[in-house]
View 1 (cartoon, rainbow, N blue to C red):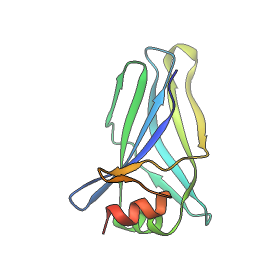
View 2: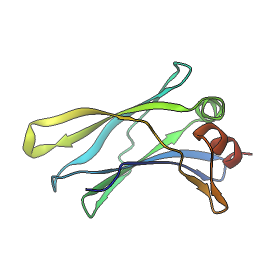
View 3: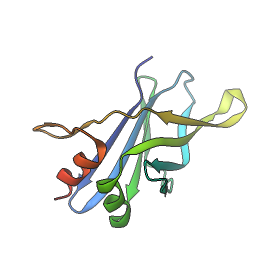
View 4: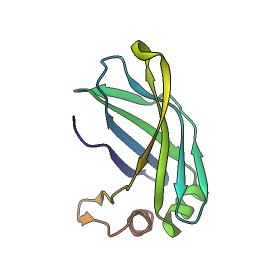
Length: 124
């Protein structure tokens, strides 16, 4: 299996958080809201809008970020993300946490030193 990934994306002024998680079951996928816990204790809850796909056993889901949530991410790093996976063949929805989230590439020029610095650079 591959590695779970988190990316912050931008389309115009709109922000998104994208989760990509390798899952073993062919019918398993990320579902429901996600909860993002920041290093200052702030909790951001993102609503599931059903924007998801699964390719090569990796489930990917996209969640919108409000301007207020983007501003919080500019100031504080992500401590953990809580998410749910629908495991149809294994008894329904199960909850998981993603810890030790590493910075990801925010733009073509390279990667950020931290999530907050990358978000600040992305939404200048």
